[in-house]
Length: 151
Image (cartoon, rainbow, N blue to C red; front, side, top):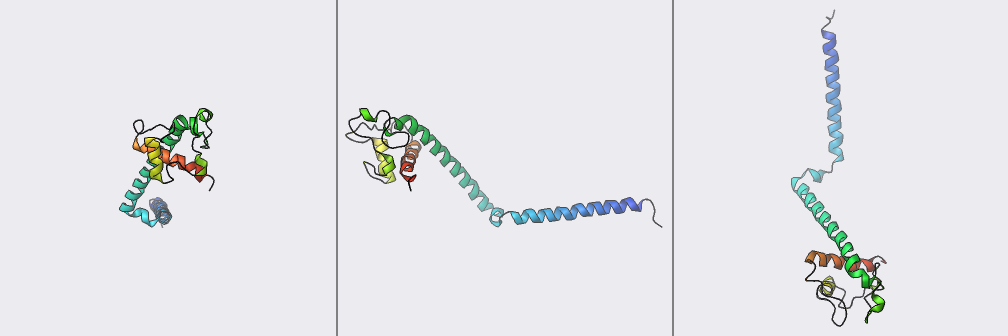
């Protein structure tokens, strides 16, 4: 014959056992859903660095869009087609970025130079004294994005 004390012990034992088994199964499921490469601390550091880099890159690109809107769109147009509100009053036609052909060359470096130093024999001003290198490189990406939209 069982004593009254044994019944609660069995209930407690079964309850605790159920929780332990459920916890082990949950841990197993969690372990299976996490990619193996995430458990490596070097990989974790690489991921954090990549996220920081991409966040900074997106910030730079967003800033470049704003800079373009305020500094470049007046002549080159919001869509980069060379027909901004001031374009008609200029002696030379602003570059149409949607064509992907640039006055001083199509490489990133050549576009950077045209933005930073200006374009000779045109009203394209030099921006190197007003903008940081990051801003200038951001504008290179922004200008090139107009021709990439058609690809």
